[in-house]
Image (cartoon, rainbow, N blue to C red; front, side, top):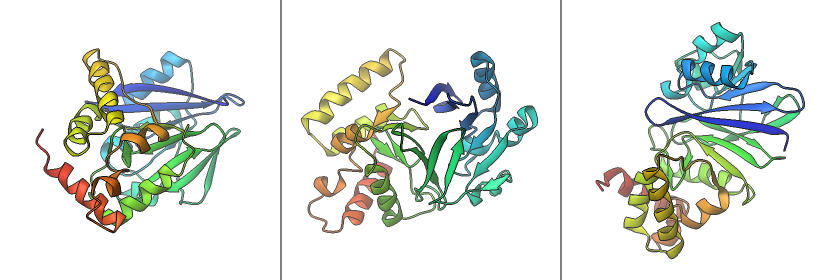
Length: 249
């Protein structure tokens, strides 16, 4: 393992992530939900901050960019849409790579939640930071994109190796589990939901997850199986996403 990840809660239900390339000591934070919380975690770790890597422009993901840059002198990198809230120092595109010291992050197109949403994948260590595209047992709302775009994005993430550790940006898993149980009665899901509810009762995180676990239990990745009456996989996904949007459980 060449990458150390520190995960910590911030805001009401976000997670912050600090990543350190062990070979060089370079540090990045994935998104900036809360600048004060990130600075406190850096102080606790005894780390500096070299880079911000944004996934998308929403305030709970890029709202701390300017404060962190002022406090640390870090370089802000992200998709072009981040300029809607804070101008990045460097715009990065899907298909490019970013080197954090000796750790290479592939930049993946995961639009749908926002049109320009990206994810960062460390193929060597099998670690992915997926922002608000994929959640444990869930996926992001379609605020800007459509079902076809989000389904394609989810398939790119699902193509990562099964043992990939997936860091998603919110602790939504208990609510996601309640919805999942309303549309899927599979034994693996029931077992996982019980474990999730137990973890949350103890105040413990359900993030990170893995690609294998999501492929086995996430209703949005399983949409074509759950809606065999809909021939087009993207349309099946759209039907499940619409059901989640209307779910009151």
